[in-house]
Length: 456
Image (cartoon, rainbow, N blue to C red; front, side, top):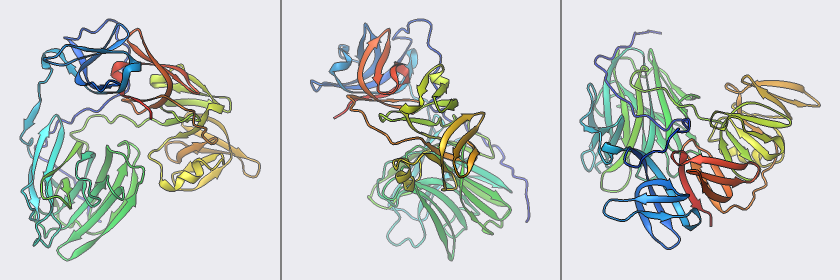
């Protein structure tokens, strides 16, 4: 196989930063004029307000320009959404650069009903495209591209796509030219309809595609293409760290010079539809450190904790990170999802009452949980004895027992990915205090929250 060294002259890209894990608690009170959070609230009386949200005197306070502040207690709220941080003098200020940073270029590949366009803002690409023209015989999509020579790699995170047709997609591409006739390898995320990822390879005389259905797919979602010699390999991931290979396209890219970039295509609506893609990197350049996806500890009562699990045994699960110091008794844990979203076919296993370990290969290793620690997990059975598995390389989900949902009044989602079903909420010392079945009391600062909603 012929091997080239990849080069990308003049590549400059500042990537946006996603939500990180919770930061240590602040030592002093935050003044609203210096820093705050933008939120939207709906009360039981039907009042809706969007503005800077804070906790003052054990109540939520929402301040919007031109209106008196709205002060309300948690029990009077139907929903509260915390959207983003703002800072004093920069409130409302936009960091839009508009023009693409060098050496990026863009164009419609194939004729579309309305010319596409792209904006670059805070490290994210907002790509707008319309369906292909009726007389266009080639695949049509909007291409945002940069030139690369030799072996290369591109990865990116698909954040959103507002066209809900099942054939619409957003993703990445490697092609040997920028005309419809050139060879292309395109990996797209289809978040609507038959949710999944699809790897398409084609040229002037047609091509082929390989898809993978991911019914539990939730955006944002990561994709990666790797070129080695003539071959292009497609990978996908829910967190940008643990990658699953989808397919190798052999012998397509024969030119040393190729173009790598972003591709967005839509199938319906005679207007522009927008997709947002960020965390774009080429050969490792242009994207900051990826935040790891935390395992989900699913409690029998239905709550999901996005939490590190440094160690566990038959008696208790000891949590780390944001949950440092918390211990959950093993009978309260239904399962631990190390890699999610899980395959749809795993549903019957998760609620089937059989304890064991769902492996990334798709096999289910039945047995009783023994211990977890140092990246290893042990299960045992009478027939096979004690077996050790690597969490990083082998484990998808540890199943302990069936869930037993407990009625809850509130649903609380956090920025780090936890979903807590709470029987009660209150405000104490500028924190939201929850009562959660199987967990007890849990406290959150306002900046940790994403959603507080009354359950129907």
